Each structure stands twice: as C-alpha cells, then as structure tokens.
Image (tube, rainbow, N blue to C red):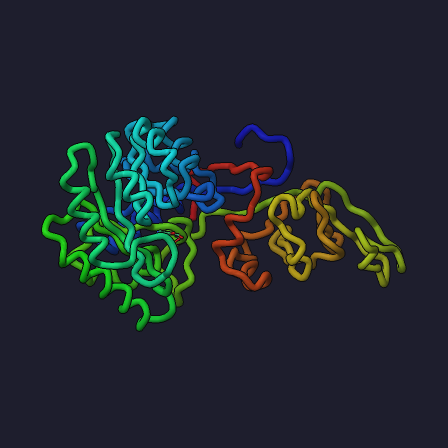
Length: 362
Ligand SMILES: Cc1ncc(COP(=O)(O)O)c(C=O)c1O
C-alpha cells in the first residue's frame, strides 16, 4: 500500500500492464514497442509506470509535454524520451541540455532547429491527414529531412505520423498510410526510427508493414481498446473506495444537494468519499457501484468529495466499493458517460492515490 490516508484509491496492476506490453510486442515481432505515458500514463501514474517499465528493460518512451519529459528524465537520465507535443523555440536549450527527443511539427520550429548550434535530437512528424501537429507538403518535408541530415549538431532520429481512424475508417486510414509511405520512399537516407501505429493500428495492421521500426502503444498498454473484438489485453486500473458512513432514511427524507433524491420507504444510504473532484464526475449519477460483488444504484447528485449509494442490509461501514475495474468495467463507465475509455482513465484526478500492485492473480 502506498502512503495515503483517504479510503479512495486507484489500483494499478503492473502485472496486467506487463502482460499488455508483451502481448503487443508479440504482435509486432522485430519491432520495438514505445510505451506512451503522457497524461500521467493515461491516469495510471507516469512515474511509477515509467520506473516499472524501465526496470523491465524498456528504454524508449513517448510523452506529450516538455514537463512530462523532464519529470521522467529526473528519474532515469539514460532513458530516451520523445516529446510528441509542440515545442517552442525558447525551449530548445532545455531539450538540448536534458537530451530530450522532440518533434518537428511545423515550419517555424524546423527553421529554429536548423538555425541552432545546440546539440539536438528530433523526429519529423508528418501530418498525413489528421490536420493536427505535423508538416504536410512532401517537398517541404524532404527539404527539411535533407537539411537536417546535413547538420552535424542535429540528429534526425525519426519520422512519424499518427492515424485519425485506425479503429473505424479503413479508407481514410489507407489514405494516410499511402501519403506517409510516399514520403518515406522519397527519402534517400532513412532515419533509424519510422513509426506510425497507435494501439489500434498495432493490433490490426502493423504486421503488414516492412518499412516501420517501432509502434507507439498508448491505450492498449493500459488494457483498453476501442476495437471489437478487443485484443488479448487486461485493464490495468480499478478505482476503489470504502463505505465511510451509512444513513437510514425514512419516507420523504432527501439526499444531497438540491434534495433531488427522496426516499420512498425506509432506506439505507452508504456514503463513499469519492466525488467529482476525483474525476468521478456528476454524469455518473445514473450508474451503479459494486460492493461485495453486488451492484448498487447511485442516488442523488454526486458531490465534490462524496457520493451516495442505495444499499441493502448486507453492506456495512468499511466495505470496499469498486467504482470500476470489477463487475462494472471502464468501458461500462465510458458508455454511461457517452465518452471513450481514454477519457475515463485520464480524468481520474491527482487527489486519487495510485496504488501499484504486482504479483496479483489475474
Ligand atoms: C502521436 C500519438 N501517438 C500515439 C498515441 C497513442 O495512441 P493510442 O492511445 O490510441 O495507442 C497518441 C495518443 O493520442 C498520440 O497522440
């Protein structure tokens, strides 16, 4: 158990994480799997996930922000960290000093890099159709590749793109793929890293490609996917709390803000110390929570620090409540909130301690 006081926590099963990593690795033999640990490792705890993977021999990681990269570099200096988000010219010195690999995603940063005397390691990002970060025109990209490759102080280590529709629209996926492939074919000297696949593309398509070297595994590292059928992966996070108080209500008594729920008969209401400030947002009020292998309905409005569950006589103070990660899955919660599993896990806030568990039976 980590050093925390509140009886609400997110359990992070590192055995499951490793299972997922190995499953992806087996899927793409001869290629390297880059764990994407941006956004606090999709809410799972970036530092702990990073340390765990590093101890298992992984040395290359991807994040979004410079802050995220710096936090990891402080732990293991020799880990290679690719920053996929936008870098500002003013921060070139910081990435150089800390040996952080970054992304050239547009002309201004390209020109700043070209004009710099700093020692820099970078990857060019090609916008092959998503219209997010990345350079678009093939001629400009080739120009950038050749100019950067000619510089002694610059290591153009990789080129990559990102798919907008790997889990849904094959036609658009192939359009992006072909645009990117054309650029790679035009390159006289290929960089050491060529990477295109996210989780979905890793499991669905990557084995067909002989021109790539790496995949960037995000959501499936954490045991989640938007694909059906899902690959052989296991969710890593379960969100738990404990019953801290039980109220007996009589007919007409109300619960919570707005007095929106009123008891129709004598009822038992369990109070759980988890609320919207923990990322258990108000939209969850239509759902249920598992206590002792049984589902109980949430009642009333979810507060900042607490929520209410209508329970029976079997529930007592101190019982563990599983918000998700048991009978109620992260995908159930995503469906309830009309969103995707990515948003459910990344929304669990900093207030919720992440408790790493290893050696737990699946
Ligand atoms: C550039 C880039 N590569 C890889 C990933 C990982 O994607 P996924 O979580 O779908 O595996 C992301 C996530 O959004 C990303 O932005």
